[in-house]
Image (cartoon, rainbow, N blue to C red; front, side):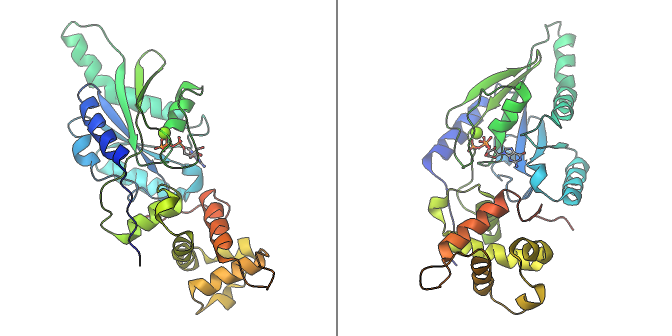
Length: 285
Ligand SMILES: Nc1nc2c(ncn2[C@@H]2O[C@H](COP(=O)(O)OP(=O)(O)OP(=O)(O)O)[C@@H](O)[C@H]2O)c(=O)[nH]1
Ligand SMILES: [Mg+2]
């Protein structure tokens, strides 16, 4: 199995910038992909974001399993963290997040008051792995397009401050990963959900692992989407299932062979935009 790693120079640089900015922010939002709340959590945030309150945001809720999302929210709250789930493309959930930010800011406001100082807007760093929807979230909160977004990892490069209402200032940051994925499953989940640049992995390999996951965890949805017979999948290798998918979609060469790369790309694209179903890859029991 080839090891996937992706840690380009701009990420190391962005982390140094974040460390510096931590001195002037009051709290951070950690934007996670609700499909992979554990795998999309950057372990370096433990020290980068330390000493200031953190709110966990489970974004892309529309693509994840609702029951799992509820469990993850409960788990984060059990650990004493503020946690909110939302779909950043929609205004829904916006109010709950703003309330959570204001609640977390309350001690700061009280401290300013106790020192006889005027209330100032709370400064919030928006951090997360690439492509989790940080810039989209900021745009939704301010209800206009100030932050550039894109359906690929690594869109945000520089930093950007934006004001939401009178009392909140958000700092967008570039998506950052960490130097080494300790477990292959983490790299696979980041690749499958689109957090890693496609230049560093092989679509075919990742799609085979995805097929393996789908056959074991979501066979009815996989069969429904690609008109497969579940009984016929028993004992098949992921390669063979990929061939069935390619045939079902008519992705064949002139000689009648399945176009594997195209089938792999189709499967990954349909998985990423929720066409096969709503799934959470990182499961709490
Ligand atoms: N389905 C769904 N898609 C979303 C959601 N939020 C963001 N997206 C999409 O995810 C992609 C990435 O969004 P961005 O806001 O650019 O992500 P980012 O975290 O700023 O990415 P980087 O700047 O690369 O780190 C875009 O295609 C968004 O439209 C969501 O809640 N649900
Ligand atoms: Mg961005």
